[in-house]
Image (spheres, rainbow, N blue to C red):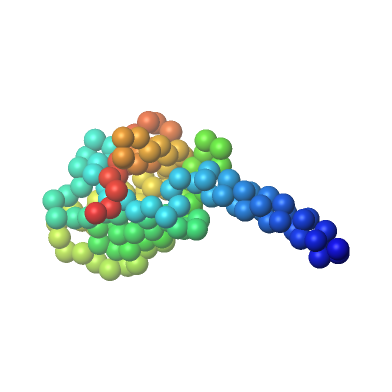
Length: 137
């Protein structure tokens, strides 16, 4: 009899915990996704350069065109941010790639919101300019 009572209390508790986990996971639509940059504000990425971002368990990172980078991202209500951005320090000789990378990483550090619309990811700054991404091929 004690096992039945224990089981009848345990099952609802497990279901409650599972629903809480799925609710918190569901509030972060970015987790487990990967994207490729198609526009930075009004600028297109340099021909031959690929800039990416992926999101996993509170971490964001990818390729900034030459160097790999990473940081911590948070999604809270309507607020979004990437902090503690760090990158590797390789030098790239392709014309303009290092400058583009610096602009991209600085832009990421200023992002305050995100939106996924029509299959595209928009990471936006307060001035309304956005980094626009497509799902990573």
